[in-house]
Length: 93
Image (cartoon, rainbow, N blue to C red):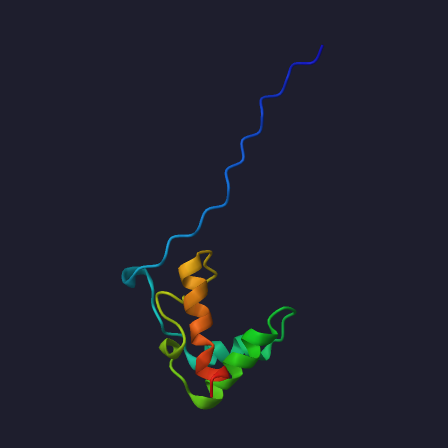
């Protein structure tokens, strides 16, 4: 008779903590952003098009990004809602 395996414990995915003012910085040199949008990547169409417009219009990073809408993927409801509110910067014009 085989020994029984203990049950697998899987915890649900939680939300990522929000960044704080201390660990968030909103500066990316235009040259660095330009390099990111000129090398087309599958799945990055919206990122590339919106940031091409940022470069063209010479927007500062904090026009769209903030502690609530950081530069890295965040998994929490508050950040996702803040991200959709930033859409009005371009889509609401």
